[in-house]
Structure formats: C-alpha cells, structure tokens
Image (cartoon, rainbow over all chains, first blue to last red; front, side, top):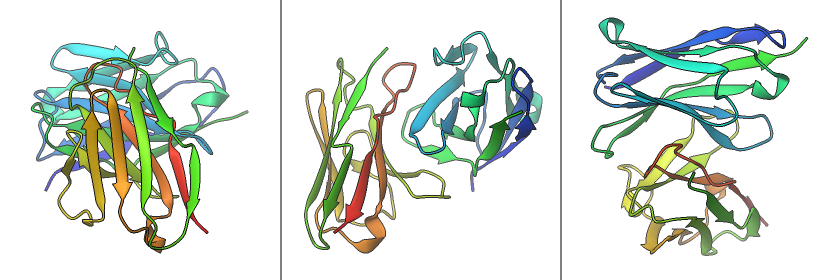
Length: 116
Length: 107
C-alpha cells in the first residue's frame, strides 16, 4: 500500500523557516510527480510546488522563498520554507502522482502555523 | 499559467436532487482534470481523474464529463454525506492549478 507521510510542521514566527518532509513507501519519488498542496484556513486548496525527475516548479506565491528537493536514497521529498509569512499558515499535504498520471496518493497533512 | 474557473462557488440543494458543478480551463488541458471532495478535518478525496474516470470505491452517483475546455461534475442524487467542498484541478501543465471550490450544502 502506498503511503506518504509528512513531517516537520509546527509553529514559527513570521520571517522564520521550516523544512517539511514527505517520506514515501511503495511509491518512488524519483520517477513520479511529488507535489505539495496546502489548504489555507477558511479558504481553498492551493498547489504550492512540485518535483518531477530533475525539474522543480513553484506557485508564484512561494517562488524564491520555498525550495523543493529530493533525497532518492531515503525516498523522501523536502520542502524548505524560508521567509515565512502569516498567510503561509495552512495544512500542507504531500501528493504523489504516478508518472503516467493514472494514480494519485495523498498524505495526511502537516499543520504549519506562522504567527508571532 | 492555466486558470480554472469553477462555478458556482456554493449551492444548496435537497436530498435526492441532481447537482452539477462546472470548471472551465483558460486553455486546452485535454483530459488532464481531477475532481476532489474536501470535508473539514479530512484529507482531500479523489473522486474523478482523467476528466471522467471514477476512482475505485467512489459511489456511482458521482460522474463527470468533458466538453472541450469545460468540465462537469454531477451528483445524480444528493446524499447527506455529500456535504463538502468540491475542487477541480488541472494537471496538464505546471502549476497544477485548482478551481476556487464549490461548497455544497443541504437545504
């Protein structure tokens, strides 16, 4: 059974940093699409970032502040979040999409709260 | 970036009613569209992918279709457990954008 397990969320002050991790099992991060999606409180779903093979992609709202990376040896994807803002407060989900775009998997999410 | 315009933003219907939600893509995305159901405190649940393919285990009252750049999710007979917010997402090209969501309530 495919599992995606997020970790690293927590409370951080504005301007601070956090690193989220998504550990995958039964799903190879190096050959498939791994995205981060966030659910903003009282608002909708927002696609944040994605890594596929050697390519990385970002939403405009996080470009230059967030960095996605992959550790193939640990089958894990990381999201380094710097210069955090109050409006980054959300539940962050790791989502895996199979390379042929016919299988979709989500983690349980990790809460990030940016507040002073 | 591809914009997904979802409508309506909310709706209220009676149990047993047919409910329709629409998403329009700002450019061609072929069939690369998914529909999700989101309930408070829960992980988004995939209902449909590839525009009209149902995820295993999804009740048969949920169906979806495509006409060009217009996509429709239909609940044939609304049930109490269908109260949720529904989102479309295109995965034709990064960023994989979501629609704004449709909140479905029961009258």
